[in-house]
Length: 315
Image (cartoon, rainbow, N blue to C red; front, side, top):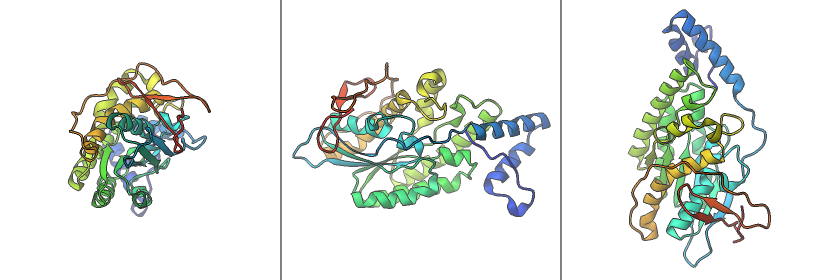
């Protein structure tokens, strides 16, 4: 988790991030303020430098049929992009597309337009890129980088609401996973974790209000995922201890899938579905190399065949 480690000397230099950091530090006893400042510096240095791009984002899931496929886009940051795993089928977007293909028996064309390091200010460009695809569904994960930059919660939430509103006006269903609680990161300790929890919750609450006002559907990632990530960080975080592992992304997909199915079922001619709590996958999904049949396991459900855009099964 990265938090600004300096406070500007002059008022003209004070950014919103520095003002927040300064007000927090000034409100603490000297010893606690010093510890928090040191943790901010250490946390910034612990942010992993991307070693490569996330898995490719253009995939098709489910068997070919005469029915038109659903078009699904995933927007947001590195969490949305699935950074840290090797295969598209291990990302949250890939798992969601596979789950939709199986449950609704419709082919799904997935385009992941999320960008590693993106903040809420970047959503406008991602939405503009998504609209020509005429998506039936947009799944958005955003907010973590806004928190690490100590951004004021109102502007990121407003920008998210504007993105959702623009997608809804184009006839696209939208499901948003609100900002996760960054205090669950393994290296985040008190008092930094207390600040991270407060900032994350404040942004997630503002996001919920804006998304619902814009006509989108909200899934509280912190509420559904934090207990599991805190209980089993070695398994659910990746090797960089910052992004989820394949099992962590699978748990996020399990949290999002009921809401995704709920908004898509009317278009598929099916009834609505109840929202269920996610279950942690019991084991990692088996990998499949080139030329071999692969499967994606939705937590608690049978394996789902995954196909490339040319109809071939892939891992």
